[in-house]
Length: 580
Image 1: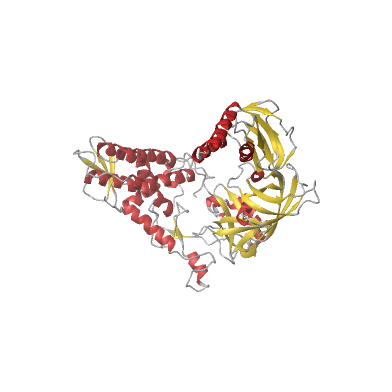
Image 2: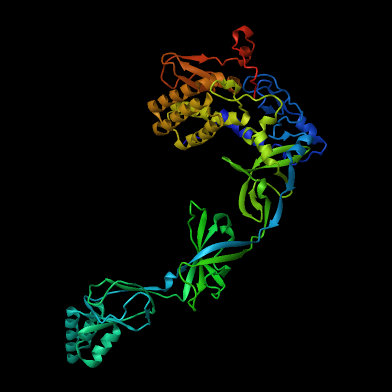
C-alpha cells in the first residue's frame, strides 16, 4: 500500500499547525507577551484589498486568491479582526443593554417536581391456566374482585383422561412396584393433577372423578375467563390474580434531568385521592427510551400499599431532591441556539465580542451547565446578546458590523470573489489532492484506497452548505459524484475516466477561483491534446494518465491582469455591492 502526502495536503497540515500554535486571544493577550503588546499584536494584521475576508500576519505576503499585495487591517471600532471578534462602541453597548457575567461553578442541587400515575405492580401478578382437559365443575370464583387465598379451592374438573390415569396409579399402588408408582405419579402431575389431590388419592385409594384445583397464589381476581360448565384444555387461561399490597407510580422526567437520577433514589409522594397513603417511595427502574413528543423518560417508583388506599389510575404528586454537585455554568439566557448548535457571545474586553460554540449539559435553577467551550472566569453576554446575535449574525463571523459593506453571495458572484480564507482553501484542496492521488495511482499502476477519499466527501457537504446558491456548489456536487464513482472503480481505465470527470468538475475553480494559489503551490495543469482531458501534476514533465497521447500545458490565468482591464470593457458594477 502506498502512502502519499501531496503538496496541498501538507499545506493544509501546515495551516492546522499554524492555527493550533496561534496566540490565545481569549483574554485579549498573547501568551508570554506583556499586556501592552496585545493592542499592537492585533494591529499587525494584513488583508487583501479585493478580498477583505483573507487575514494574514505576514506583511510581505500576497493574497492566495488574486495575488494582490496585502495591506494593514483597519483598527476602527467595529472592524472584524482575524480572530473573528468585533468592536462595539461604548454608547452602543449601553443602548443595546449588554450585560456580561463570568462563567463560574455553581451547585446544581435542586428540587424536581413531577406528576405520576399509580399502576399495578407486575411482580405481584399471577395467571392461572388449565393443566387439564375436561369440564369445569363447582367454580368457586364467580366475578372480578373476588378475593382468593393461597391454597383455596378454585374449581373442579371432570376429565376422562385423568380418571384413567388415576386407576393406573391405584393399580401400581396395589402391586407395590416403586418404579412404576413413581412413573405413574409423574404422569398425573403432567396431566395437571396437583400434589394435594395426588396425596388425597393415595390416602383414600378411590378415584376422584371431579379433580379439585387449588389456588397456588393469593390475590384479587383481576380477570375471570371461564364460567361454570366450560370446557378447558391445557393452556386455557382461567383467571388472573393481582395483589395490591404494593403498587408502581409511573412518572415522566425531562431528559435533561435524567443524569441526576438513579435507581434507589428516595422520593416524596402525595396522593390527592388518598391523603393517608404512604408518603415515601423509591425509584425502582428508569426506562431506557425517550418519548420523542414530550422529550421525557418514564421512571418507575415502588410504593407500599398494604392498607389498600392506592388504586391504579390515581394521580400522584412527586418530589425529588437531586444532588447535582458543583458544575461550570452560565445563566441559561446566555445560551443561543441555531442550526449549528449552542453558542455564546464572549466578552473579550475593551468593547470586543466574539461568538464561541459550546457543549451544554443539564439545566437547573436558571443556569445551564457548560461541558466544553468555556473556562472558569470567562465573561459571556447574558443580556442583549440577542440583539448582538441578530446584528452581527454569527454565521458570518460578525461580518455585519465590519466597516466595508458586505456583498451577498449568489449565483452571479464570481468564483474569485467568494469569501474563501486559508482554512477554506485547505478544505477545497482535498479535492485537488484526490486528483493528484488518482494520477499517481494510474501512473504507478496501483489501486486507490477508498478510505483516502472519504475526508474529501465529508468536507463536501460542509462546503456546499457554506456556499449555498453560488457557483461553487455545482463544482462540488460534480466532484463528489466523481469521487464516489472512483471508490468503486479504484484502478485502470475506470479510474482514469473518473479522474477526467473530477478534473472537468474542478476546472472552473482551478482557472477562475484561486489559480494563483495552485500556481504558487507548484502545480501544473495539463491537457491531453487528443481527448482534451485534464490532469494535475507537481512535475514540469508531463505524465499522461490517459495513454500515450501528447500533452499541452494549460497556463494559470493572471487575475491581476483581469483587474487592470479597461473600465469600458468591464461589466457595470452595482454601487451597492461590496466585497465580503
